[in-house]
Length: 424
Image (cartoon, rainbow, N blue to C red; front, top):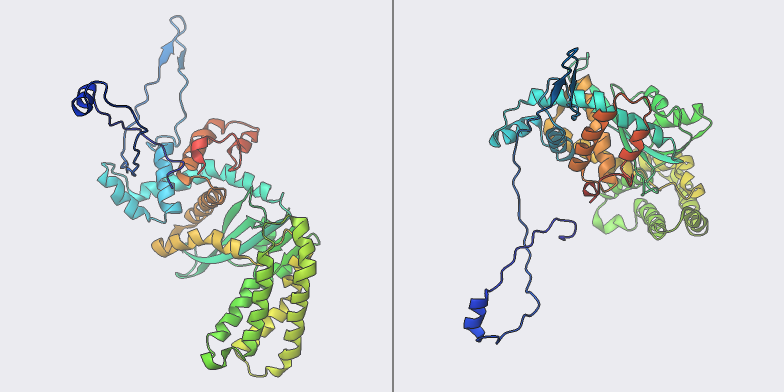
């Protein structure tokens, strides 16, 4: 698909002399052009911007003024919005470790160390990008339904023994709100309830999660918070059971019969994806609630027959213990059946984690949370991450002395004020 790409037209026409030689004088007529298209790759290149800023002095008292000019990103640094965006796009979007970016830049004649790039990222995150991150955090509270998940990460210098697990938490707007999506990461040293308690302290609504007890604890503490469960986690447990059953007996197994019922629920839910929230809720009552009722009735009927501790009993126990949370989607058309959207939102971080394995410092981990948040939010809203970060790092520095943060509205991923070249 070549739509959206710039096109350079290159003409290939015969001269008057060539046409006369071929057809005789005036013996030809022009037909529609034959058009062929091919992709052309333009390699990256590094250039130096040399800003000459006019300096003027009063002849009488000697006071000086300078011509207006863009603010530098970081005092005393040679980094520009384009270079910073290239590093961000490389590491946080394409999962390229900084040592490989260092090698790549060197091939283009730019000698820049990975330590310099790491320091740039931390300072840019703290000084500029965190401003938008905090604004998005407040915007997340506008949604009635959000989703949450977490994944472990290793941080070298966090004051604990080597190999101690830290966590990257992810919070995102509900999957059923496709127009204005927000994805936010938050680094924390533990998986303690205090972290989502603080992050969601001003949130009121429904949060879709897996079966982690921490979220259920929060629901008991906050009257205005409802936790919705994830059907995928339950389905996976029965898939694991089925994988251990020989093929000849699989279709007669209890696990298979449960899986068939879960699949039927998903199949019917899939038919509702293009409906409005109100229409989806109505159809769930008619079509899906009876299927859910039948499934849990079957589970309760069979549970006492499963006496051997193992994967099947664990799968039964999980679904029955989570019944309250798994039924929440039946009461609200904006609540998805599962937490897959959160898992997808955290996948970019997990891919990067495989490449660089550990984060060196706590500041680096906090910066990663800020930058991954903006990168994943941009991707979720069909923006080009490189162009978006370049724009942010061009505009935000010009407003750092503003007491009014309303300029951030025009930088949100869905803002009509964004330059067109940022959109896919």
